[in-house]
Amino acid sequence: MTCAEVTHRIPLYSYGEVSAELEEQIESHLADCPECRRALARHRVFLSALDARDDFAAAETMLLADCRRDLRLRLANENRPRAWAGLQWGSWLEALRGFSAFHIPFKVPVGAMALIALGWLGARYMPAKFGGVQASLSPAMFSTVQSIEPDASGKVQIAVDDVQRHMVTGSLEDPRIQALLLSAIREETNPGVRVQSIGALRNSPDSEEVRRALVDAVTHDPNPGVRLKALEGLKQYAGDPSVRKTLANVLLKDDNPGVRGQAIDLLTAHHDDSIVGVLQDVMQKEDDNYIRTRCRNLLEAMRASVGTF
Amino acid sequence: MHDAAETVCAGLAAPLDETGLIRAAQNGDQDAFERLVRTYDQSVLRLAANLLRSPDEARDVYQEALLKVYRNLHQFRFDCSFHTWLYRIVTNVCLDHLRRRKVRKEESTVVETSDGPVDRVAQLAEEAPASNPERQTWNRELSGRIASALEALTPRERTVFELRHYEGLRLRAIGDVLGTSEEAAKNCLFRATQKMRSSLEAFI
Image (cartoon, rainbow over all chains, first blue to last red; front, side, top):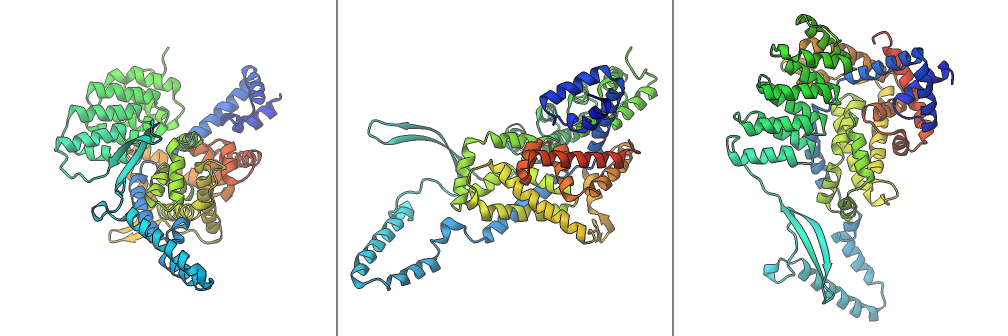
């Protein structure tokens, strides 16, 4: 493979979008060709620079909440789709009018069947207190089937977990409210809710538990928007040694340059010579231009060497 | 950056209750529809906002695309993942907006307020957690260059580039979403990357 062929394929190779065979050929060429390795390094700098674009990830939470509210309103105004269309009153009346076209002997049995059907539907959907069959779920209840076991009589036994939605109101000093927010940070699957919980807890009184939850979110949350929000919450604790240790770890290990950039800003807000080693490590590994520049400037300001020897 | 890729993977290994939610939504259950959509709507909004660079247009795309999903859900036949089907609708709506933008003068993001003119996009960026002035200057300059370079791509190149570079989707998935082959998506990505690199060459 020639240098021209390799450099032509570097963009797709960098995205891991070439075949395994081609990847092997490129890597074999790169191992022996310093010029192509430099071309690859330049392309990687270009790719990491693209991450400097303003991203909406961190700012979208409010917008998302607005969009969801608007969508709910629009859906409420939408005509019920297909399955319900046949049950609309207009359609029912049209259908009933159509019966008059039948020959008279059919009218009686069809009418009787319609009455039976109406009676059954009435009993099925009438509230239990009026004698109808009891509806199994209320509208605000979410159910998950956990297991289904047939029994000897031919019936089935279904284990259902029900989740009932209800509103809880209280101040941020209220331990129950704090407990709910802490639980949302750790358990909630929706990252928007996790961001909102962190935002609310930032304004709550200082507590070890809040600090721990923020540290956990910064370290383990899979969503970079949530990690950024948690870093924002840790700003007030940036002088705390255990928090600084977490920030150093984030700076060295987080895969998102925006998060690493925020971590270095918090770390360097307090003068601390003990971070020299961390900054030197970052200089060895970091691809992001902004973070490298920040590290270099800080190391030079601390009169420390830029690399490790 | 790779949330969408994770969502795609999650979509491919569709959770057991997703099928149930789709069927319930197909039968007119609005709650089921909302629960179904909430798995994906954040990445939908982010894609629209980043592609169109306008919160207002992103909001329009969100509504338009998800209402289309709701109205056409009865046509979903489970012959691809729900995520692919949904993203196909969303990217088509985004492409329509980008194409319309090519023929009309792009709206300004600046709005008049009682405090004077305010740039909505810049305002959103400034609300982000980063607050270091040196960093903001650096990022603003580079970010402006990137925005211009993206704006110069064709709508299709821009969509492919956004989905591959910023959303982390594989080219095969992008081909499925755009209703084209992996090879065509690959060529499109190649052209987009070359153009971007050439636009940013002097800066990097």
